[in-house]
Image 1 (spheres, rainbow, N blue to C red):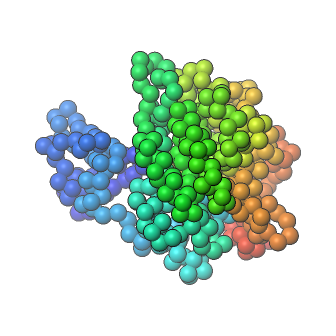
Image 2 (image 1 turned 90 degrees about the vertical axis):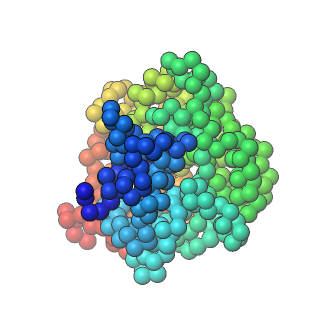
Length: 404
Ligand SMILES: [Zn+2]
């Protein structure tokens, strides 16, 4: 028997892989039934394998072993900051809870927070009610660390066939996916957040989930617009063509992650079929006047923005497939893609007046690249390196090849 419990989280946060001591401490054995909504994987003999799926099963272990505390979270963050700067990141939109918020505050207090953090409260931590009770509004904080809003979930994911669909997945008779938050409950939480001055980022992958969000944000427009809030739909992966113009018309930001398109295209073809034409429909959305805010969904995908830019302008996987791009009519030009990663991301958190563009009076957050991304051929984007990263006028990363 090992002498310490080991708990590893899958990158999407939907399952755990744990060792036998962690199972023992959690009291999980062959007699333990699957908790409602969760699965304990078992071998042929019925013995738990150490893989636990979805929240209710994962909680069995977290309750027994304890989540990483603020100290461990803080030291992990301190190690991650140089890595973020190495990739050219100067700020992030972060979805997390108590331990991370405390760890960021400690780093901030020690003058070591060199990345601008805009926090969206994670629904798994049940922070909406405490935040509204305390009267926290979007924008509370300082230039380094701010609470920008709350994240909510309308549906699941394409890979697990839990994205919520208007019509069944290809090859299934009646699978429409899952409303992770029932629409009535979603409306209640969204209205509670808006009334309190907090904006929302609602996760929506499937075309039905996106329609639910659009209907909800259209009917609550007075609530959020009168408070100057900027709600966003997170991912916007599949839209019904009739919904394409609605984001711009209502004033909803599309927060999208280009690398999802190239990572998911085989799944999309298999399960969405011809509907994929309006999957990851960046160009159509821009043409309708939608504000795009690009990101990575790290740790689900790499946080490297150059790899994201490559996906945005080519819609090709890094192995070159498909050569002409997947639904190439939805590719973006490099200017529009860079704008979504910079100005669009700043706009989404209401800070485009001093962040996301380089001009007098704005934050001196910038990168020096080894090549001109506005002129290089798209296939050469992946070879471009970040030579230096500057945040608030301070050099936070310098490549050995670059001597300032
Ligand atoms: Zn999400």
